Length: 210
Image 1 (cartoon, rainbow, N blue to C red):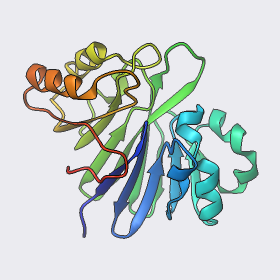
Image 2: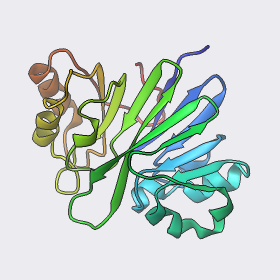
Image 3: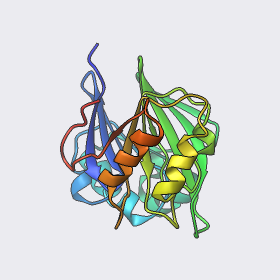
């Protein structure tokens, strides 16, 4: 069995591949949807998280669209391939296991469902846009992708405060959705505050070294 490979698609988008099976989370642009894969998951309905959904589903006519009901209404043309996610629910697709965790999107009345994706012994968490990581506090994860923009998500200081509430320090944090913030500065501070946690600033198009 191969190791999980994660590639950053920009903003909050990621491509996950294992054993020749590929899924996509929150593709931010049309270009980000130009990927051959089996499933696309969206945490919420804002365009910087759904911009590549149509391209992905048209490119992959047998692919599944996994998302919450609020987002699904934006893509009714794919209703026959849509699976609705609910807070606390589970979904299996082949060797992929999805566990959904609700988060609070700042400012907007937007349903945001973060997700833990597992495949074999590998796990990857994605918070979406949220001002708290509460649902993830007791979760055992290899890697968690977190936003640090502020206002609509946690700010850098709030993100560190939230990570300090976890039952155990997470092995790896990946920064995402950092608009106008300095992700490198955030990672330096995080590793000082939580020495047992590694912090990665991803580069668009480049696989993460997990």
